[in-house]
Image 1 (cartoon, rainbow, N blue to C red):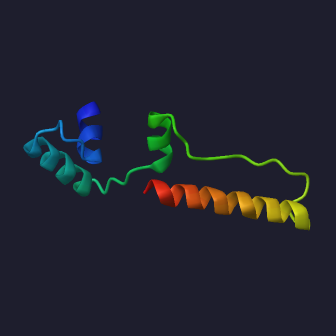
Image 2 (cartoon, rainbow, N blue to C red):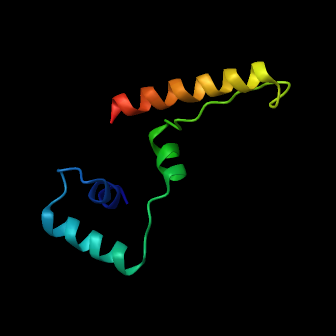
Length: 79
């Protein structure tokens, strides 16, 4: 299972012939990587929670918007 994971992620410790077999099998099975499963495996969900008493009030809506913009700007600097 670890070899399959490494092959799908493109890690260079997997022999090219093995990587090709894994990729062919994944394509045949219509395998799609699950971001949720990947985040569980890595221990990094990249999710934050915000608790607010009201979403529609001006102050809270602006605060959430500012948090969203900041998170997006941080994410774009890591790409």
